[in-house]
Image (cartoon, rainbow, N blue to C red; front, side, top):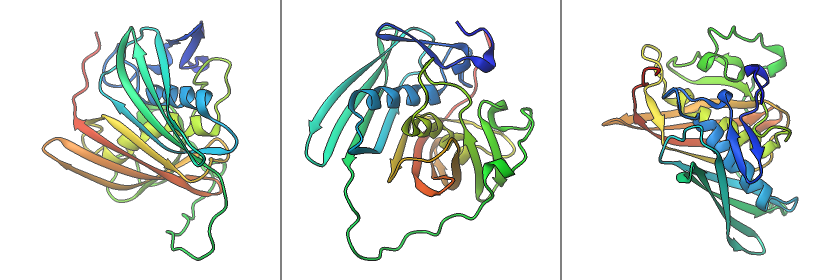
Length: 265
């Protein structure tokens, strides 16, 4: 066990199961896990089962249809199709014997870009995270769950928002985070960063996340740029662009439902 919260990984592995730790507690109930540790563990399981040097994880979609508690977790992986250029995979998050979430991941073979010039949005021009003063935990997004470096626009501010974010814990005890796992465990930040309001905070719980990546991230910091939020009848969508210290790496999008936080029990 890891009694000190700042040293706790999100999971400790025991045989075929992953035991959730208190550090993975989410904002929607005292006895439920945070979406980021669900997405992260699914990404961990998919990469462990199907990752290779020749293939890059280009799309990860996670559907979260039930809030997991702190029961032991099993990740069940399935190879849907193995081809010369595409590897289609699936993973299921089983908590206490009940299916709580499911992920699909496309691994695409690395080759070479074709000839020709294709338009892309310009790279963002922002200071690197090590040059930015961190906020105190009391002002940091979600109470300092992540290491963050604000760039432009506060959490919930109107207009474009930009921030650097880095995970401060291991996902699974004793296993270093891979570049793909760093993105997977960070991707849930898309919802609060895109969907929170300045005056009322976060009132949407995301039901999914989809990450598109055209390359592996470099370093430990993921940059988020909020580019879209719309909501009607309590159903919201949010979108962020993702960066690392060398430039754009992909996007994260989510759907979300209006939700009130439950009082602690």
